[in-house]
Image 1 (cartoon, rainbow over the protein chains, first blue to last red):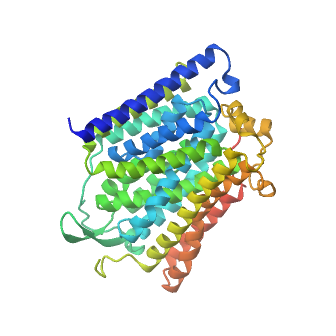
Image 2: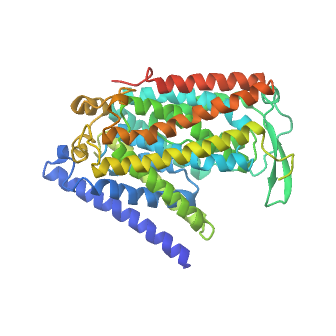
Image 3: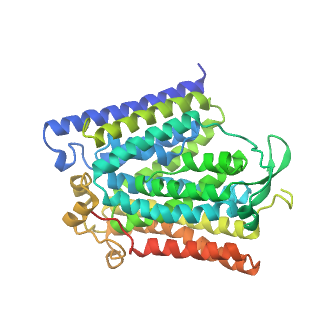
Length: 321
Length: 137
């Protein structure tokens, strides 16, 4: 077993231990009926534990190629004592800051494309506002159940969706031609410039209604949905799709984040350590990525995400609370 | 990077502004948080009390703590917990600033479809930021 793999397994073990300790701590709290008081752990331990947890999550997210936002909400809401409202508020900020940090570099390198992103972002951000409003209005158990179901669906998409490096687009559709959505980028692996254009734009825009709504409702990043739509449906090259998806998140999540901020559903004590931990973890993850075997880690993370989704579903249904 | 693969003027402008705002927002978030937890400025709700409320739904949290919602936090800016919001506000405001900056570039090019898209996007984000649209139960 290589040194890198050993390190990765160590990290996964630490994450599992943190969750285990938390579950034990929560169980004991319930036993001594101090839930309303928060916990027997001194208050300043919570942000530290959250920081360490999100730091590890950030590393795993990058290595597995899974968005940090989509991991954050189901896992933190399932295993931490915070209300789902505050977890979703923090989750949006985690996804937003990740996108804001990566966005400028991707735009400057010509990988994220402004013309491709803006029409999609307009639809997704508008719908994310409605999603946030609905999510904050519905009873917690309903949102938790829907979140669990959505996460399981995301796991299925992640596990089965194929990706195409250079999809064939014989003819650009009328709408994308009018909007002049096309481009050229330099593909390093092939050592040549790649021309790209898209098709099925109206259908893609329609799907962003749903993607935006779900991003706002559950406080999830939406890379898991953006990339397949941009890549497989619209026909943008994979690198352009992934980069544009990250940039898209910075707009979609901004709109929803405002709803949560104005509603008071962003607690700095939860949001700040989460954002800092995830950002730091992501940076370390990028370094590890060069040496790691992402496929193995991806499956571990997907399994972990499935468990969190299943737990959220059972929690929402009142079976495992 | 050849001329053909070079990103457009408005794309580079957007990236440049976004980079500055993101860095500023993250810096402010960290500084605000340190001020908050260190108790340098008095908070509206003591940090040690937050664990009593973070299991509640947001409406109950607001009711019990009397934390200001919407833009009502502005007069309380000298409080530690409110100050720690500033970084979050800047991060959330960054995108609308970027759109406002690139709008003239689209207008100069007479790129009407994208002028319309950017104007509507700015209005949508301003509506979200205004606090007029919030969920409730």
